[in-house]
Image (cartoon, rainbow, N blue to C red; front, side):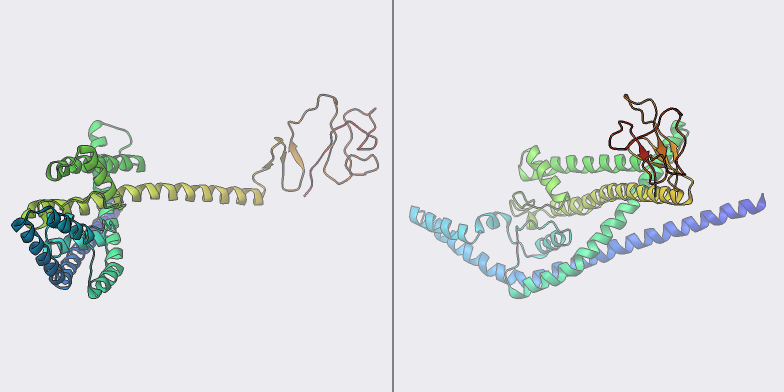
Length: 358
């Protein structure tokens, strides 16, 4: 009894240490990813902000000319230049390559969303974007995967406690329970985020829900992009932080759901493969007979074990395990049930014969 108690204590200690290591690993990944985003934001700010500032000054000059002379021609000229340089939306969005906008761009790159709302224009910015994505995307995938595992672990603990409190016999958290829990959490995040973005962006609730779904599934069409109105990137830091938390945490939860779904399919495939391998081993050892489409069962030596075949025209069925096809001169031929019946040529006879051979 004492030995078993020591064994259980040692097992709990090992499990606790393993969970602690996993938590430390997840926290380290989060810190590394956040630091990587900060570095990327600083570099993008230094590479792209000066070019954007020059374009912004040009746009301000055009806007000043429009205020001085509100002629129709000046309006048309301003509109043509603005549309050509995609400044209509950018004017409402404000500077995109200051630190907040650069951090938002780095997050979009790392999360593989790719709205296309802001793109680097300098050669150095484009080169750094490619190098940044080559390192950042794998780092983001590992981080989301690790956070998803921690969320699944937390959900399993909650499910076990809930089952134990309800008096259920089985208190284990099954894969289906975890899938339902993460699916519900994903739905809550999307619906809540849709309400928030509908309020801040002025979109309808359906459009906001569509934006949240496209964002968290990393489709990123770019037809709806948050933080692009009323210069929110510079004037609404709280809204910027909320949007970044929504993207990072929402992607982690969706990654947990997808991870469970993929794990379920992989488990089913492994179970099928293991079952097929076990059947093959049993058949090879002679422990399991072979069953064919006509419900006839044979062993590995070709001998008929069971036959459910019947005929309407013949009351007697000849079964032979050799290659004589029911001939009368075969020494191995089994005796017919009806001794008065003598089989003739197999082609001329209406008797249905079966042969089992390997």
